[in-house]
Length: 140
Ligand SMILES: [Fe+2]
Image 1 (cartoon, rainbow, N blue to C red):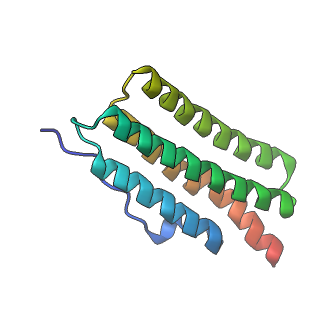
Image 2 (tube, rainbow, N blue to C red; image 1 turned 90 degrees about the vertical axis):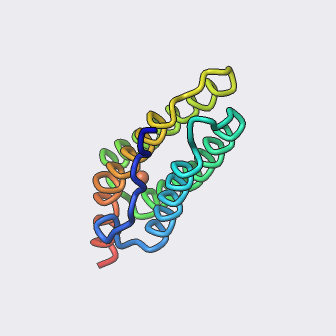
């Protein structure tokens, strides 16, 4: 049997320095690792749907929090829009996966976990960190 994708191991390079955001990122990492752990070749559609539903609902909550902070701290328009655009693209992709599951098209676990893990790590390391260094600088 093929090995599973490795779990994401939280390390200090993921930390943005904004505690509430880091805490939410840790929850997201845990959710992805749990999904990775739970999913195997015998996973039913119901379990897959439940995992995707929980994930999208927490991700949307987290994106809202970040976006509120962007507005509150007057993050400049261009990076702000780019950042929100990334959140939207992720939400749309996961919502599409969810809709396809409802319609009966199962996504392969490696494709799902691979996409989620890559997106989250790239987003935290690039886009989120850019915003959070702005927040920290504006706090002086
Ligand atoms: Fe973000």
